[in-house]
Image (cartoon, rainbow, N blue to C red; front, side, top):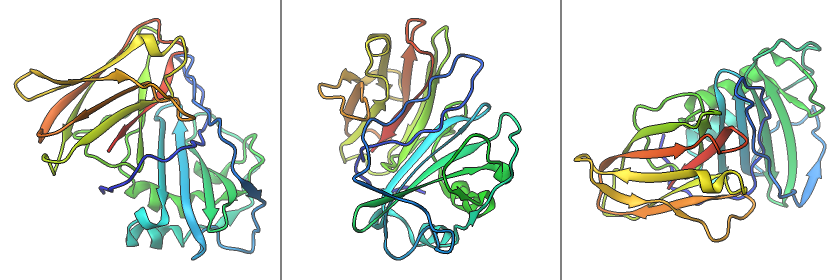
Amino acid sequence: MTHSCVLLLSIFLLASACSESMSTPTSTEAPTTTASANSSEAPWTTASAHLELTCGGYFEGSMGFQADRSQLTQDELTLLAQLKTTTGVSSCPTDLLGCDISITDGEGVVTTYGATAGDYLCSSNSPRLAYDSLKPFLDGVKCKYAKGTADVLEPDGCCLNGMFSSSNGTTTNINISVPAQDATHKITLLHCASANRLPNISMRLLAPDGTTVANGAPVADPGSDEACVQMEFTNLSQGTLVVATTSSFLPAGDFFLKFE
């Protein structure tokens, strides 16, 4: 599933435990207006204009997805229309995959939900979505989880692909493929602009012969997404993206990659 999308601000992230003292980024931008969910109403309706979600767990790490209604495919809209609320189960097994979901209507009113595999409530006070009603949509979203792998990463501006740095630093090689090689593409690393992260992360793009095509440069205005490093490139159909952190990248844990 590939989208042509623009970078959207404001990220709602799921805090998840991690053996490497994982740090989960949080949004600094508050919604314009918030609303309480009504259990008698469908979460996603014809009035729904924007979706943001972040999912994560101990084993998977984090990933995010953001899209305006116009950026969603018809199949995605159909799956979102099948979302349902639930009262949840009042217990909390460990290491579950969970999601934070934010739906904005055409008037800018934001309604937030939580969803957890097994519909466990844990400590969340958010209205709950039935996980089984969300899972078909998640299965169709091809965004990379921080502790997962991607055979090939293609441009999809709706995806916040999860990246992970251990306490010893991590070098991650990602194969990329670009269907329209004559277009200009942009790769941005997010939630890494803090003083202890930005100096300790780098990004470069290699052509198939190993030569360097582009190097990431610091972002002048990080914004609420805390963008830290960015690159642009053209005339490349395939390559390898190398993202490296050092042991001084603190706190260790998740950050995100946007490929447009």
